[in-house]
View (tube, rainbow, N blue to C red):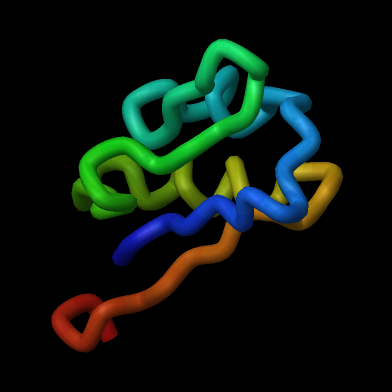
Length: 69
């Protein structure tokens, strides 16, 4: 599983970072990007889904890899 932040949609609300700082980082302007190339550790999958659900701009998506299907 990977998370992806669409930089065109992100408005810097930082809910993703507040919910899952291990998955996201915030730049000096407040915009989020993925940590670790977006790879989500097994124990952080629920946090990744929570971040997607709580993004007001719908800027975060999850990409399931073949191994987790």
